[in-house]
Amino acid sequence: MKGDIINITDENILLATKIVKPLFNEIINSNQPFVISVAGESGAGKSITAAAIAETLKEKKLLVKIFQQDDYFYLPPFTNDKRRREDIEWVGLKEVNLKLLDKNLYQAKKGVIKIEKPLIIYKENKIIKEVFDMTGVHVCVVEGTYTSLLKNVDKRIFIDRDYNETFNDRKNRARDKMDSFTEQVLEIEHQIIHNQKFMADIILDKNFKVHFK
Image (cartoon, rainbow, N blue to C red; front, side):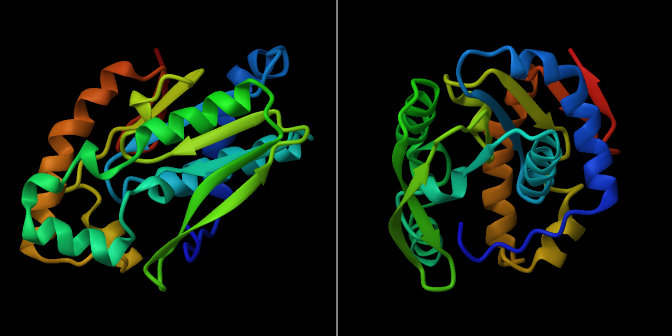
């Protein structure tokens, strides 16, 4: 999503290193781009974790592309929020084109060089198209609330922090409206997302300690 500001800290890099190091041989021995998903609730730290993983891999001379689930919403952000407020049942998996995201990851793994994907321009509340040049890409990192559900993933990471534990992070991010309706949305999302924990290969607990299953 264009407009996101991500500031990677040394602590983020240290966490990413703990994730990447045990996976490194598997990644470099893969005969196609290796896909890592990072899932969790709103404000859990998905974007910063994905960015730190990408940076750690780049330091090892690997080319990385990040796919953000936020780009795959059917509606741009302000329009989607309006739709949610008109119909609370819109909240959930039906908002996101996971099928297209999975297709793009499949294309990446099959060696497609030019992948056309959506790009959300947050401040302008619009969706445009962009083309990812996949030449020489070794790893795709895909992050978002429901990314554990994607088929074309090699390793799944789940950040085990619920929306109550991420309250301060969401408040500091200042992207989501902090009202009772938003909390209702997050509760609905929680019921969908928390089950993904059991699909994960790697779990980051609420203190960001790394647990391999």
